[in-house]
Amino acid sequence: MAGDVLSQNEIDALLSALSTGEMSADEIKKEEEQNRIKIYDFKRALRFSKDQVRSLTRIHENFARLLTTYFSAQLRTYVQITVASVDQIPFEEFIRSIPNMTLINVFEVPPLEGNILMEINPNIAYSMLDRIMGGAGISNSKIENLTEIETKIMTALFERGFDGLREAWANVAEIDPILKELEVNPQFLQMISPNETVIVISLNTIIGETSGMINICIPHVVLEPIIQNLSVSYWMQTNKKQLSPENMENLKKRVRHAEMPVTVELGSAEISIEDFLHLGEGDVIQLNKRIDVPFDIKIGGVLKFIGQPGQLNNRMAVQILEIVKGGEESE
Image (tube, helix red, strand yellow):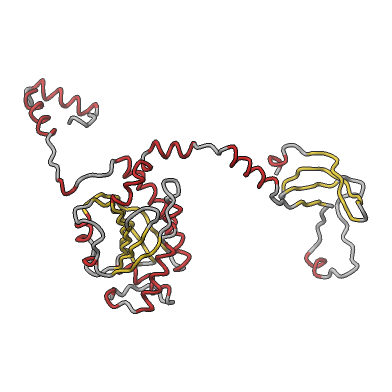
């Protein structure tokens, strides 16, 4: 009860129990003492704070959205990927939790040391492969019998898909994911100590009518150099970061040299489809404006100036007569 906030109904019930003798103050103290004792498993050491776990959850929610977009385009079918859970467990427990035969991509993430694992359930992997090969996305879990061509296709698919992690991690660290190897038997993976704490992000994945899990395993040793970047205070400082004077000046220079389309509207006219189909060379379309009426000058499709036609160095030109204020609102 020490860390809980009681509702008013619970408070009333507790006071009622004390007043009627159903519960004594000594019993409450005894229960509170018992609740203070928590069993701690040193094999499941919690190396990440709740704040850091929340930050990792936000990062991979963004990554899940990027993966959904990427796989939808590549497979041309309904794809939905969402974060199911984010847990910190020993590496040995993660290895035991995944199938004996599955698809595991091992990625390097320089400049960070160590590797990141991306485990794809065989149902999902073969559904993707079937879609790429022109099928309906039917899963056929024979992961231990991957041919060389199938391995190449799957490697290319997930290598490009994992590029989205670079964008998802941009606010925390600049990483460059590189596929190191593809493995089908998790027992052969000896990246780190079995008792080393890892973060496991489980992504609930739906490909057409097939569903399964994609698990991303990130060892603590990989995140240790940037662990302080996962705090809320760092995210807030990053979001509030101002551009330096040098960067601001470079931005202004680029804006000044940016090209914008300039359009001068001489007028407009309405004609029937039949007249349009019979237009030919030499025909005249009468516009709704007189030649002595100023023209609208639009910049990027937005009315900005009023002008009149003219000539400059034997070339057609437009002279600006008036600046239109509030052009954006008028559009």
